[in-house]
Image: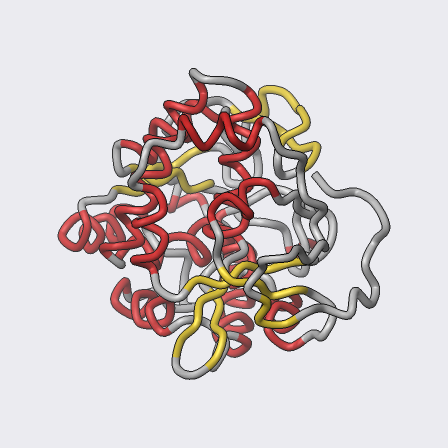
Length: 296
């Protein structure tokens, strides 16, 4: 079972052209994981923990250790849930893979985080197009122990359910917020920039690129600006947005977004690599190596 996720269809999503799976919640088939799959987890875990020293935000590292995550074996969801429930009331639920938007939002709104139960193959160590167990569990789950960030994730889910009933364009704007915060966000901390976005912390290359490359822009958090900004699904990001604290995220999501969606509808999208007048520019990128098209 551990190498046979049940794919329902494929379609274009914010992650690119990827499979969409059954929406059912499934038990983690922990006893069925092979030695190779546990070794893949170990390889990825050790490599990323080494890369993230001095790069990841302190909450991410501290919370992985609170969970007791180690390279010894793929963690058991039920054991992580015992820790998570006591800390923030969240629960991990096993899924086959990417979910339809409304199903995903409903899980978040009810403090359930969907985790793909299968892990990539050894030949996919450096890149996999769709989120697997390592991306979800290593990258996303540690910050769910952080109360403010956990509240932000629930608020995002509630906002997603509402946006789903408003207009497809509302979802486009909201997806950009998730992309530039939950997946690819940076935070000011300890006198410098640190990573908190799961898409970065689960990627060796982007962990280094996001902080150290001169190519990308690094711009201060601005809710409306982010929700207008297109992004990359096939390369490292052209722009990263920087928060000052997790409280900044939850404060930004408290108001009703309905008036904001109307304002955004009347404005054009911003290209992924643009720097605009009024941006708080932490670093203006050189643009070296950027693709000339492909923004979503």
